[in-house]
Length: 222
Image: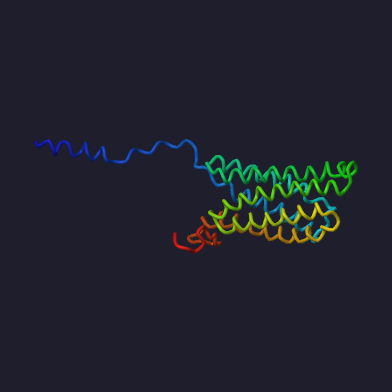
């Protein structure tokens, strides 16, 4: 018997792919749909109040931001960290912090600051806070450009919302018109967030793409 004949099975066994290790945990699902839905609900409710669609005195933004926005984005962000997505986890947890902090400022601290320092001082402080978020969001928009169009648009529109609202609050009573415009832009921003979330959620369910996601590089050949 030739040596080649006896060595052939051993060679084939060496070339065969190694058996996959058993999986003790399911692959984690993406937390982005949950996070952007929570963000969309919150930003639309707040923007409807800013745009004058609903009465801001109803106070609906505070419970929605806490129960839907902050909680949903925190859970979605932790899911993204679990699956190794640094960008997804960072954006979701960061805006969960925003949706937790902002209602606290408006509900529990705005009146005290206004009483002690005046309405103009509170507006300037809160406006500066929003402008800092505009800078942070602009950097995230740069990253989202390389992911998909609805995500990029959502971040760009959010930068505009922060800029308009921040300048509006810092301008005092004369900035009310900017806050109204910020409300209209915020509604569009929330709709873009819903677009992204629905595309990620529904497209894997059907035999073909249900909602266009328009991934980077946006129609150009890869």
